[in-house]
Amino acid sequence: MHAQFLRDFMTEKVPVTSAMDIDVVDSSEKGVTLKASIAANIKDKGVAFGGSLFSVASLCSWAVVDFILKQHQLAANIFVHTSQSKFSAPVISDFTVFCPTPTEEEIAVFLGAFNRKGRARLTLAATIYEGEVLAFESTSDFVAVRK
Image: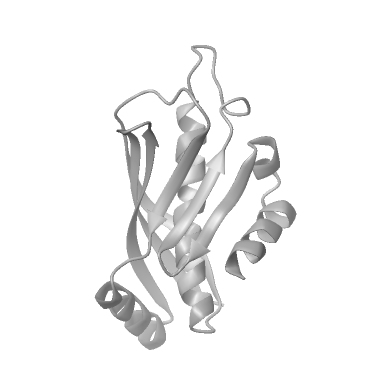
């Protein structure tokens, strides 16, 4: 259900996702997985553009926060507060980004703060592998503010 919402959201509200050829693989209690083609995100060196890797990773992590809030019937504006990225290897083929759902304890702390203060922060990490090698990781603090 959230996967279809996410597809519709990307189409309607984030039109650049079409140009970047981003699609939803899965959105569930385990986390969110997005994929993108190298053809739409390649730079002159024949590898994926770093900005594309970061963008897809940010969207993937944002979707995890959105999924958690929707599971609890909460509405919020979600944005990246801070982010740190590590580029470890070139991405030379179509790529998949995965952001796991936080632990139950992390979710409970996040929801507790959100319910008390109307805003909360959650740290998430999204990863991209090139074959078996970790090629990119983005660790970001997302903030949700009650609508």
